[in-house]
Each structure stands twice: as C-alpha cells, then as structure tokens.
Image (cartoon, rainbow, N blue to C red; front, side, top):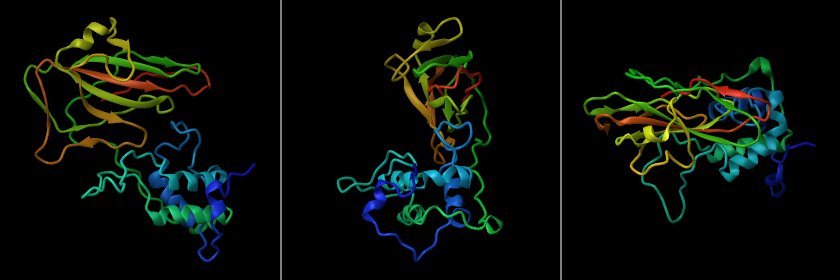
Length: 262
C-alpha cells in the first residue's frame, strides 16, 4: 500500500513543470515545522526526520497540511472572523509551502541529491532566558495499557509576597507519553486538599477546583511563553502551582515520567 498521492490529489493534475525533491525542498520545511513532534521518541506516531521515513507519508502530509490539521494550530481566519494582526508563533504553512508538498507527493516523492542537500534550519530555541525558578512534578508517573491518564501535581511556590510572572518554559519529562501540560495558579491552596502525601491526584479537564487561573500550556513543538515587554501576570502571596499532565500510552509497555517541570 502506498500513501503517495493521497485522496486530495485526485482532483489535481500532476505538475511536472516544477520538480520538488526531499533534500532540496521538503526536508528544510519538515525540519522547521514538523520534527518537533514527528521524531524518534516523539509524541507523533511516526518520524519524518529522514527521506526513508517521510516518503511513504508524502500524500498524507499534503492532505493534512491542506486541511489545516497539520501543523496543529487552532486559530483560524474565516469570513466571519478576520484578524487585524498576525498571530504570534503561527505554525500554519503558507499556500506556497502546501503546494510544494502536494507537488512532491504527485511527482512520486523524489529524493533528490543528498550531496547537494539544502541546509536545514537551526532548531528553535526552547530555553527560557534568565529563568528564576524551576518546579518539577512531585512523584514519578508510570503509564501503560491503552487508557490515557490525567494527573495533577500540587506544589507550593513559597512566595510570601506578590510575584510577577514574565515567562514560562514547560519541559516534558518523557516526550513519548506527555501529550500536553497545563499549568495553573492556585491562590487559595485548594489543590493541597485534593492531593495525596506526594502532592499528586487524578484530574480531568482542569485542576478540579473553581478559582484556578491558567498561566501556561504546552503541547509538542511549543516554545517558551514570554510576555510582551512591560507586561506580567500577578501571582498572589502563598499561591500554589498545579501542573496538570495528560499522558498518552505508547502501547509498547510501561513508560515513566520522572521529571516534567516548569
């Protein structure tokens, strides 16, 4: 079975006037926009880090990008809602990039000349500069079987005065099972009553109480979140931090997250 061509290609005639190859055209785009998830050990179901890995999925890649399901970016511009300014960190491909992937698929996913490969872009900088504090999950989590797991970790910030949050970096402890992470401020300390002696409790759809404030989120490929200059989030004294992690099993046995951190 071959995925090359894909269902979306049926209504398009093959364009042989512009030759598109992996090493000269597609690899730089995939490296910049896809391999944050589609890499060995990543959360995506298959890798796109080499020609051999990517070529069977050429048609699927063209279809998914044309539909807008990949790269995942939920904001949309529609006839009813036109934004006046561009989105920050917009992951969506341009029309030209989508057409390039379609042509590559229609042409049979040619490899091109590896000795004349186009340079790959540098990976995005995932490090938050000048970070002041790091807070990690309070106990390891094992994930296995076929059911997703949603866990919350309640941690004290030990801030005796008002703090102002300018940036957040979330680090998944095991990228193969960490589906996404939400971080909440808990000004009333309600999470402490829900947690066991290790500060851990099961949760779904949020931290499990009403007055939590979402202050950060992470999904595969996400960059650190930084406020504009002169802007910060106020964190009340004696606030607790809740790290809400959605785990997705790989189906390959027991996997462990020992260190998701903020």
